[in-house]
Image (cartoon, rainbow, N blue to C red; front, top):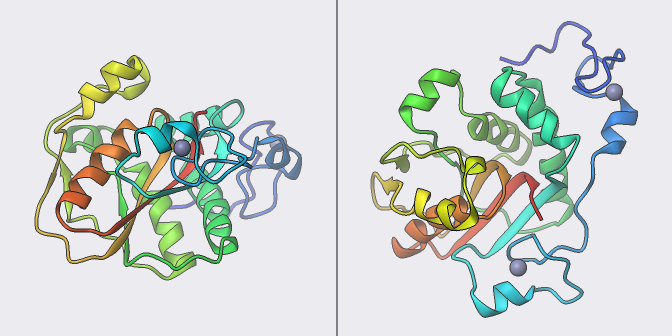
Length: 223
Ligand SMILES: [Zn+2]
Ligand SMILES: [Zn+2]
């Protein structure tokens, strides 16, 4: 699905890029990287390993790896991926995420689970961006993808339209397990994490079904 054969223009400034990149080197450097993040939620700046929120009210997931802060121009890239079918963005961001995961030299999970779209939205968009990113991670890290464990039980409104409290309600009970998971550790993958309500809901399901460790892998994180 990736348009790798023709030289392309940088998605942000329209300069010519190399064959495989979505961005020219200058634009790639302009993306704001996440450093000094809380090991658990990936969000708040933490001098120690955990932020206050995670100490007070730990989420269901155990750790977060994210590459970029969700702000301009990453916001534009994600929009281009989701609404203009620029699948090369999934490749570009997926490669950066895979590099960061490798760099952390961590034990890898048993499998990758992309956050599923509701069937109706999947049919409208034609692809699931979380799955497209997961495909890059799977090939870079040699991990299986499991698309058959979790599904969206009901359609939800886009999280960006909602307040933090509404987001929590919007996704509560939105997912269901299709079988009992036979994994000890999994990584759930999404393009962006904003409040973390969606990934937390999926992590809750997995933990309650016996998965011991749930990691969150995401390209961009709002903080
Ligand atoms: Zn550029
Ligand atoms: Zn935290």
